[in-house]
Figure (cartoon, each protein chain N blue to C red):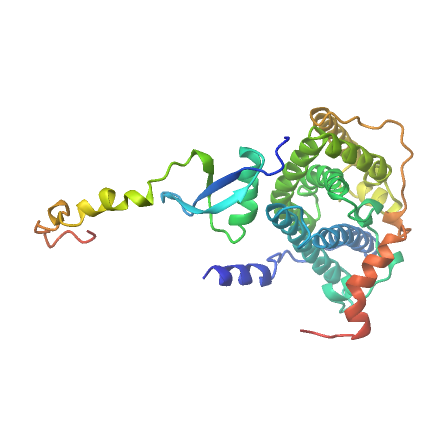
Length: 95
Length: 276
């Protein structure tokens, strides 16, 4: 408890049974338990959620924006990776 | 969509439609007095907590305290509405909140004590939340159906409050040298106000005989157990043989209540009936 600043946490909320947890924002807390309580107080005041995940921000490893070209652009000209060349039978509604 | 949800949530009239029970006039008066006592308690503490709004130590706790304040004000409204119905003289929840004098307020002295520092606020909350939580657990089985319904609704909120303030007592008590020193000072300041919840008034005695309110003795035992457990974890000492203040539940208040009411009631007193 010697740190003056509490670490940063990322908050994920699931809005309904069966849906995914979605990133909603971040907050400061001294530990995981306080982070969940703070998330409840900050992000679920308007009935947004039924479940909360928190993870300390330092544990999230992100892709490097400088590498965006080599990471993502090669996918641009590979339309054949999209399953758009199949005939969908008329009986199938929600695709 | 989001802000609409919130607006309707707060403006929504509480849905307690239980019809008034058929009480003899003197019993009805007792239930009315007691309902006002419960309402005053939540009202004054809710107001005290609202004073933190915008001044919390960090944003997350500022919101946490404001949430608890709103929970208590919500409970307050249900209770004042019930009191207004019981009284049956055309007064509204607002009249009861804004147009009564300090001697008519029956809240225990603890809840009118000033916010002090964060440790004082946390300890005041912890003392109250622990009582409130175990008390509501019993009150939800009251033979008075409206009080039982209000208690059952508030219990969900109180379950979170006791968790929140217990956590903070432990963090501050077992935290840094300074936080511990401040918690110990808060215990010295506020402990004499912790006993009044369990000191039974004449009104309470008669309601207990009627089986309308729960016996405080088992609640006191649960309160002692929880406080001891949390204080142990917080490396704080439970004070022994402290002389307990009382009087609030009979309308004898500390000087602080007058200031609270002055701020709360100013607008309605200066401009009666004003709406905005």
